[in-house]
Amino acid sequence: MTAAGPVDVSGLRVAPDRADSGYRREAFGPGWAPAAGPGCDIRDAVLARDLTQTTVKNGCDVSAGTLRDPYSGQTISGPTRDLDVDHVIPLALAHRSGAHAWTDARWEAFANDPNNLRATTAQLNRSKSDHGPEHWMPPVDACAYAHDFVRIAYRYQLTVTAPRAAALQGACS
Image (tube, rainbow, N blue to C red; front, side, top):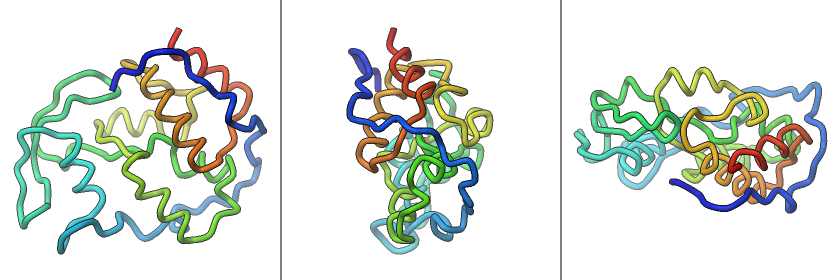
């Protein structure tokens, strides 16, 4: 996922985050949306995309595999219950950055957009929490993360704060 070149934030609107967002996780849907195939969901689709040497049960339930963690660079093998699927742009951050005005359908689409999802360790996902890049960057390949963040923010017309924009621009230097 290594990205080359500077991060261009010029297409994003710089604005402060909403102070009182009224964020509720449930607004983004009841959980992982269904994916292709019976019993399949977006989490399984992301794990199938991001892991190699997978063990699959019931046609699409990815129960184990090997991940080259995009945030740490480590290779992790084992059961997928030890992995999280991270939102590159966290749901609460998106809500503070413009998603508060979306419809329920758009919230659920964002929460389940594979372009905004990465398999990673539970530890890194939880350390990131709902922080933006001005407070959290992956220890490895921050440049690729910044490019992904900007691409998703642009696609969903989310705003960035001035410190967030500066952190994104500095990720590739």
